[in-house]
Image (cartoon, rainbow, N blue to C red; front, side):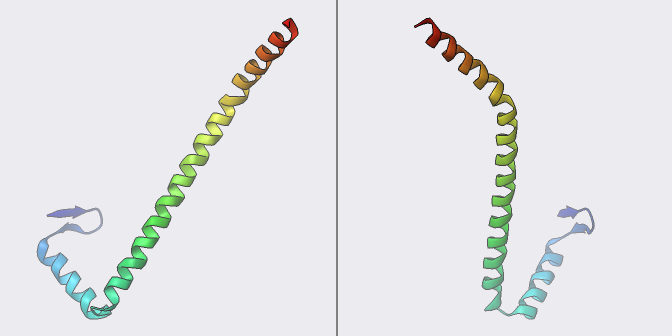
Length: 83
């Protein structure tokens, strides 16, 4: 038994009735096309979420990066001056 926030409890018979209604509305030939487009939408959504996570990771490393890069540059400068 599946419990959803807005539906209460959904049993096997309710799921089967919903699937039968979808089959009657769209037909057997149209359902694979609908599932394919649904899959593409989910893939696009996941890519968008991953892109946002990468942007956040780049932003946080960019904030940390320049301070360590500046210390590395100053270490290079001091070693170059010694030579």
